Image (cartoon, rainbow, N blue to C red; front, side, top):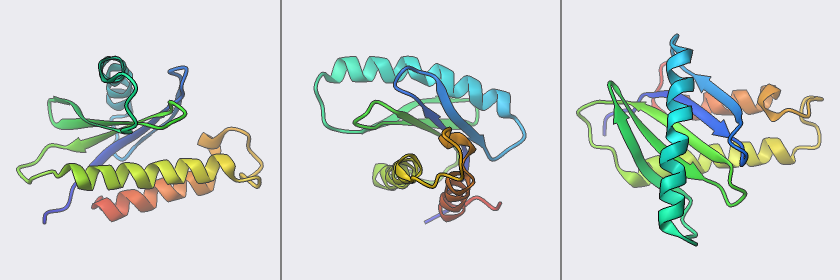
Length: 142
């Protein structure tokens, strides 16, 4: 199995405000745009799906050199990841595991009463560190 390269992770609130857009490359504006445009696709999928209990939304779209995947938590927080396009096979099960790890990292940061003294989870050092660890596990050479 070849390693995937995670280009960016975005956490977006239920009100469609960015909580955190964490990029692993120098082109941050591109990934802010990707996170923003993925919201339309997520809304379409959620509206078309009705009352589904499935959090994983699958491949949202592919753009230039990235594939964008989506996930929505039960509390309507959206998680979007951008993976570098490659010739390797990407299995939904693997992407779903990445999302579950990111969801648990977010859940742990939000429910932590000692959240580094910050009420804003995006400023939490432990939350950002956990995202970096997940990225390394996926295959990014950070």
